[in-house]
Amino acid sequence: MRKTIGALKLSLLRRFKMTTLAHPLITITNIIWSFDPATKQVNVLLIKRSDQPFAGYWALPETAMREGESAHEAALRLVREKIGLRLDAGYAEQLATFTAADRDPSERALSLSYMIYLPQRPPLVPGPGASDAEWFALSRQPGGIFTFNYQRLRFYSLKADEYLTDQTPTTGLAFDHNWILTVACSRIRNKLDYQPTILFILGDSFTLKQARLIFAEFGRIEPDNSNFLRNHAAMLKPTGVTAKAGVGRPSKTYVLTLR
Image (cartoon, rainbow, N blue to C red; front, side):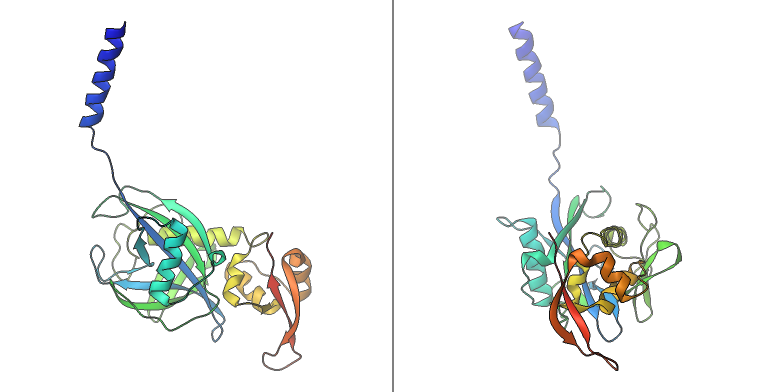
């Protein structure tokens, strides 16, 4: 009996040694959101890649996770390197892990994705590995599809977990980033009633009208300030300060309070 068990262990050990173990690259992919007060639109940051694979394609900012740092720390480091902002940990929120075997044509790569909420919009600098960096405006289309627009460029979210097999630099984003944006938009929309962290892009405080604009961008139309405040009073705390925007009376401002 012992001989049989020993032979079995030896067989399994040999088989294990002959098996090729996958050592995938672990990358951090950031979905960086901001608010443009001039256009009153939600924006997402895309960079134009200068390195292979997908050189010339627009993409979400990425970085490889370094030894000794957590994924959360890597996501915040990416913001410092790409935008020059040092954010508190609360401005970063883990979205999901993307592990499709074909998401990177050059090597096995896993992506840990994070949503980043920028309370301000500093000037953009492409940085290493990118030839351009721009804010793409979010727009919701009929059927729940989202588009991301900059000048004549328009990229679409997807209806299902699939990649654009015929994508080009003007029709699709690099890797599976169209799908990552689809998941990000769905997450934000689904959390509006209990954890609308997307409101962090409005800064330290905001008016009810501004908050309603953000909700509307993700397909949640609130008819007026009174209904909005009644529906979300548990998450909104008055600051006691008013803000003047255009004609009319100054508006009360609020801060987001999450338990």
